[in-house]
Length: 323
Image 1 (tube, rainbow, N blue to C red):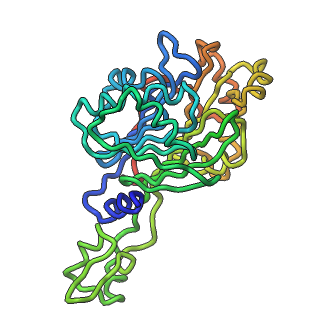
Image 2 (cartoon, rainbow, N blue to C red):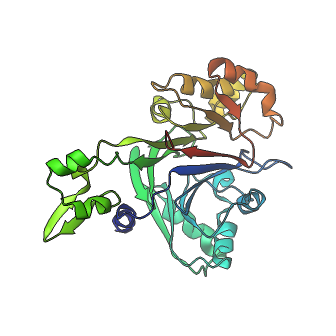
Image 3 (cartoon, one colour):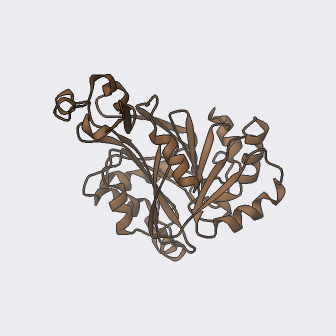
């Protein structure tokens, strides 16, 4: 029921911002290093924050990146290995300590409630509700606080999902369309920000005054998996494709297959194969055996020139086209 309530609030309009801030909070896999935090990525839009994964130390990494706790309303978990979830109790306690009282939604594989309940044993008196939303299908879409979230099943040693986060963009206001549909002038402005408007007992809809939807913002995040066609499909047309590169050295390709991870070149091949190439690619989730990812980026760039090594605190602001 919450899904529909939150979606309805989001669709009722108000001020619409034209940018999405993305920060790679931590880019380490398995265990943290002295100068590398574990996996986490934050996205900020319209005063709300979404976090993907929450490895140990995430709240400290967020502090270092000057990221806020309190507006964090949605947490998406790829899977339940410790390097992706062990930072949750501390982060939730800090959010409560900063005065959050609104519910927090946690999206994750089907048994998400069991894992979150176990973690919250050490955070039993939070001042806000934690609402677990399970992913039960191979591909499933959710809408929360302006974020359109598509979870897609990938191939790891346990059930694991990647995520595509989209911010849709309405079409341009079309006065000729409004006149053809006999929409009163008094509701033109209201219909640019709301799905419906009522005037003198008649309900008018946004599609009566707006042109076709324009290109929005799209970010695809994927880690802990072998290469799969669905990853390429999801990354197609993304403004930013964040993908695991567990190993840079091609001599580790066998180890990548055994542990169901990827090498730099395998990740780059996914981007290069996309029908619409991603505009940029960040590699992340590095093995602790690889202290210097930059030493291997040449192999990825030879396949996909717009690939770079992600690093803790790396951030980008993605705007709508022509904004």
